[in-house]
View 1 (cartoon, rainbow, N blue to C red):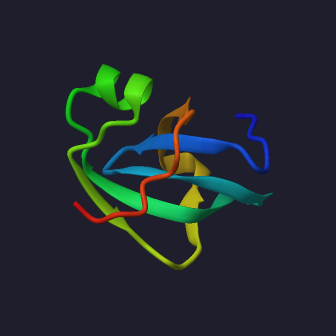
View 2: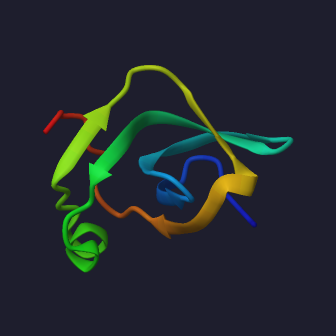
Length: 85
């Protein structure tokens, strides 16, 4: 996988979804800031194309994601969600 520091992403892992900005890539992990657990993306095409998400749980700490758990990664071309809903 190839990631870019500063890139905003929507990540799907084997058990959950996240949004965030990549701040570090090291070992088996990427680190995100301004991350949110996406409990429900809603209609997936709408989420990726318009940034509309159904359920969002933003966090204020750094989040590390194990590269082995990632299924796919999408470019996030929208503001990162920072409001809980």
